[in-house]
Amino acid sequence: MILTIRNKSLRKTCELVDFADPTLPKLIEDLRNELLAINGRGIGISANQIGVNKQVSLILFPDNWTSKIDITGIKKEYVLINPRITNYGPKVKVDEGCLSVPGVFAIIERSESCEVLNHALNGEEEIISAKGILAQALQHEIDHLNAKLFTDYFSKAQQIIYENKIRRIK
Image 1 (tube, rainbow, N blue to C red):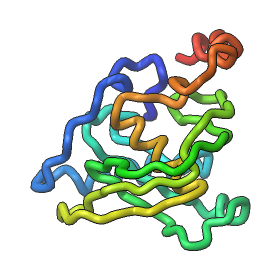
Image 2 (image 1 turned 90 degrees about the vertical axis):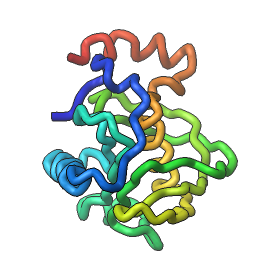
Image 3 (image 1 turned 45 degrees about the horizontal axis):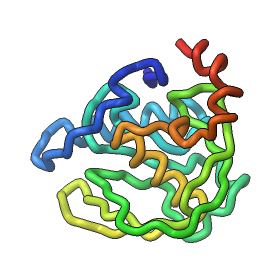
Image 4 (image 1 turned 180 degrees about the horizontal axis):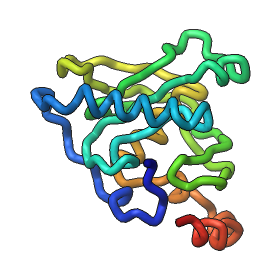
């Protein structure tokens, strides 16, 4: 079950992963299963969204998205472990939503590109250079790991517009 905006655990910074943790592969599988279960309504999920306070996220471009967006040069799946954004490109306005804030979509600012220092399951460092939808998803999921939600980027006007809708989320 995906936790919603009212759950306080979404506002706790996630703990770094110990690569010797034997539960890590199962956590990644649980994240994958959650994303597959929602049938393409989202492309990313973080461990804290399922109640696990670890710096792990998964980005998965489902088959029903590949016909809607250009994913040329993008892998179908990214496992993020202890990720950190090391470089940001210029800001652009993007349309965004969040599984933890169901039914709310808004235009916010994100960097159009970014570089992420990530770790493979074995702990080896890797750099992910991204632009477009992948850069947006990386920033969104890494924000989750750092206790931020996309609603934190709302303008004052957006906060007022969406206040009642967010308040009704269980």
